[in-house]
Image (tube, rainbow, N blue to C red):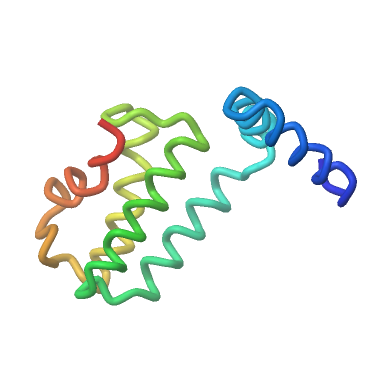
Length: 116
């Protein structure tokens, strides 16, 4: 997958076959999305935001949720906890306290809302 013809072909399959085709495409893409690169993107997003804004907090949570889906991370597993702590350390550098979190534990609860 990569050139325009391949992408158009995949889109036609999605239109024809719906969810099952999309799931298959996600399986294929799973191996092309770098976990490290995506985590770095999340952390860079966190560095550039003002989490006083609810929208920024919600965007971070949605990106975290997508990250967990992309890399098959389940809440309260070692890989999940390690990566979430990495994100928290980045967030806590500038805004360890917001309307939605004031500690790692409240941040963890906020971030896993759509995962559990």
